[in-house]
Image (cartoon, rainbow, N blue to C red; front, side, top):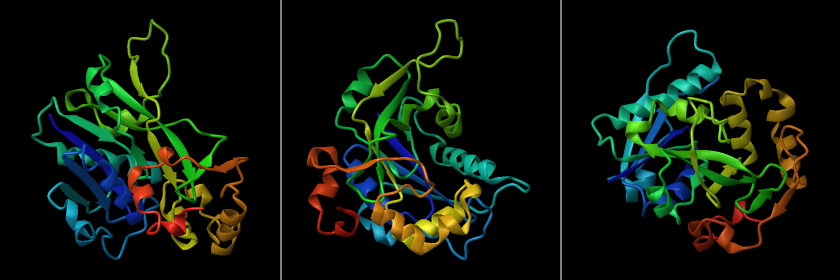
Length: 264
């Protein structure tokens, strides 16, 4: 039985480093999909992923390039198409193996992985902490995020389909209901753990093009919001420092000096 960790990549090397090191003992193959265009349709000069930066994991990484999106796709269709391109890396694998579908910054906590294997439910959702700007800055206002999903490959219709399924209790009469296995303390959603310049570039590239405006992309404004611990988009989030080391990935705790720029 193998586990495949699958996600899209743009240029998030810091989070990728944390992900690979945190999950390495559990994952048999990392499937990484990068597109030549971003989700707003801009064409990159070059692909960003550099395997040499992650040479330690080269035997576990399958890197897939998406040359171009279908014509006339909008932002969300591009994102969905790239996520479903993950299937290219699952051709020929055992249908009883497991697949994890996440965004790159949604890192599951596998410390209780045996509970997943023992569960009778076909689908697993990881209840994750919402982390903003810094690796130990918790969003206490919106702190139930079911980002990472997991199932056997034989139960995966498409990656985007799994992403779209709501994690909730369904009425008994719903024929299409999913009985979820929930992993509490299921990991972290590390949002915008980047420099202000990188955050600005992210806003210009991700599917939410409604935020691609100067009041959100201006680097000085972003710096100020990070300093004041204010949400980029004006949501009334309250942020608090995480004080317990056990609430962070072990790799971060073991490398605090390395990540000092992104710790408070």
